[in-house]
Image 1 (tube, helix red, strand yellow):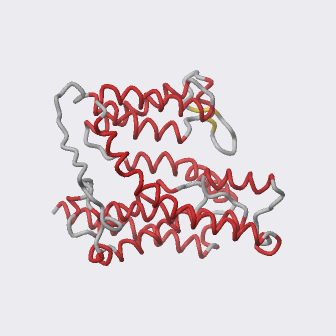
Image 2: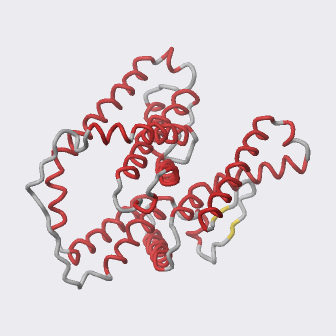
Image 3: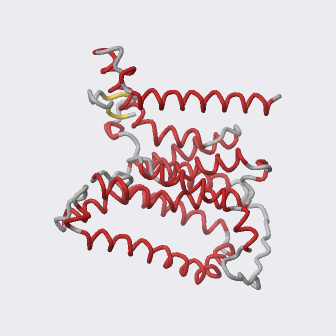
Length: 316
C-alpha cells in the first residue's frame, strides 16, 4: 500500500491521498498491540472481576535463583546471538528479534504449551534478544554509517550535527565519542535496572485502576502518539483499522506474528525482489555467479524443508 519502490507507482490507495505514503510502522504496532487489547478487554469491562493484589511480596536479589539462571544460560546465549544478528540488519529492529528468539525458544522447549503463560523461557528469550539488538544496531551505524533502526537513525543525525561522520574512520578521528557511546549504553543498562526495582511497587498499583477508566485514557494516548508521529489525523483511523484486524485475528485464532513480520519485512523484501528481477532480466545467470547468494538460498530452503517436516510430524 502506497508508492511502489523503484517506479513510485501508487497502488491500493483507494482514492485517499493519505495512503500514498502507506501506513507507518508505529500506526500498525499501536493498532495491533494496543487497540486490539483495548477492544478485547472491553468485552469484560462490565464483568465484576476481582484481582488479588499482594503488596507483601518481597523480591530478593534479582528475582530469580542461581539454578534458574543456569537453566536459562543456553537460551540466553541463543537469544543474544539472534538479537545481535537481527540488530545488525538495517531497518528491522528489536521487534523481529524478539519474535524470532521467542519462536526458537518455543521450538526447542520441552513444554511449548506453556508459552504465552509467562513461562521463564519465553521472557528470557524475548528480552535478551531485545537488549542484544540494541548493541547489534550500533555495529552498522558506527562502522558503515548505516542506521539499524529508528533510534540509531536519530543518533546518526545527532552525530552529523556535531560534525562526527560515522564510518570506518570514526574510531581514529572521534575515538572519544565512540567510547562515550559505549559508556553511556552501559550506564543506561544499570539505570534501567534501578528504575525497574524502585518502580516495581508503583507499577503494580496500576492494576487497582478500574478498566472503564483506564481504557479510555489508553485510547486517547494511542491517538496522540499516532498523530504525533506524522501530524496526520488520518493515522487515528489507521490504528482503529489495524486494531479491528487484530481483534478479528484473535477471534479467528489466527496468530498475529506472521502479519507483524510481513509488515516489517515486506518493504525490504519487495525492494530487493524488484532489483533481483531487473538483474535477472539482464543476465539470467547472475544468481549463479554469487556464491554468497547461493549459500543463503540453500540455507533458506533447508530451513523451510525442516520446518515443514517438523510440522508434519507434530500433526501426525
